[in-house]
Length: 522
Ligand code: NAD
Image (cartoon, rainbow, N blue to C red; front, side):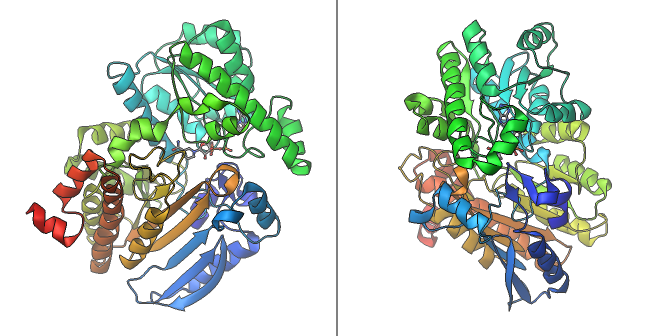
């Protein structure tokens, strides 16, 4: 999994996997030592990794985790972007993103289903059930953002994706996800106007400029969002004053000035989004902290724009449904085919069957074959145990790793993304992901990680990551059931505790909670 995230990552030469600076290991020496430790590691040992550097191997019971990680954690008062950068420069810490530092990234498919599910929810809520033919304006074609064109097409929408780096546009054309690329807004709008459903145009330009021009012209897209790496004002968002090349140079020698300019540009983009919202567009932030950055540059109304998680995904999280995924460690595509069939056979929910059939047709394999599939509480463990039986019976070529994005119901506290405006005011309390990680360790997951970071890589979020491997053994069946049920169960309880009725009924029907509560319900 470590080698896989680098193979499919954005800048493997710098150990960067995605999201501007999300790394898989602290430095190359740490990488080599991690690989050497993993090769030598016994079943009765646990390797500790501190922000991408291996620091010790301890004896542990065979059913306990093989790898435990803490990544990017700095105590509250010191958790500022500036201090974090200083620690990074001194080689003491790293930012592991969500799935880079704990080797769980599966390429753009992970966010593809996320964006697709989100667009489906937007269609359901605002457009009588479907985004078919609707005009979506967005930006960013990086590691995560490059999932947007395909997700838009799968949802039947048309749209424009603004990207400052022409090479990223070319990559999306080569993948067959962009219908055309231009650097001229008139051409883009003309192509879109005459286009068919699913037509997505790449527009080479700066989002702050282009969004402003669109608002100025009185063109009103149906949906407006953004997936530039706005969370990182130095490396993630090109200021309007700079060309791409100038930005790449300037961020190395004058990061402070770049950050200030980038925040001003983000403010300009958000002001345009607010104007488009006032004109009737459905506008939301897609979890990249764009509103935080714009607000810090003086856009007081930035938070009148909805956050995607609170507005559209929370009802799913209340049922423990979120970005679950699995990876065929054999490398054989036939294993993923078999598991796709199994999703259909187990008949979880019709929407999952349609997602899997779309993914089968449209998702190009990246690295080890993988499938993202938003299973919920109870569904995850049932599926994983069934897969473990397929491994045991030799129907798959090798073991299967089960994992999820940290942005999941129990896995993350992020007061501007996953846990924004929690009903009981608990948005910033990070006890939950820490409890999740502790519980996952106690449940025998194979890898457990506690990450922190967020905007500018400090202070904004805390999350837990998990990987459990189905190797066909009886022990694996027990650990898969325990760990996956614990993880999604804690997520349901977190929302139930905050007062969400959907989560309270999900908890009741799954028998989650304290003994007394379970008895009272019987
Ligand atoms: P990335 O760094 O790989 O890509 C960012 C892209 O934005 C780059 O291609 C860059 O050239 C482009 N860009 C930068 N400034 C621009 C500007 N002013 N105008 C137009 N294009 C510009 O980052 P990524 O991996 O694609 O992640 C994007 C964001 O998504 C991050 O902030 C990340 O934290 C967030 N994210 C969201 C979710 C979710 O569930 N919604 C999940 C993971 C990550």
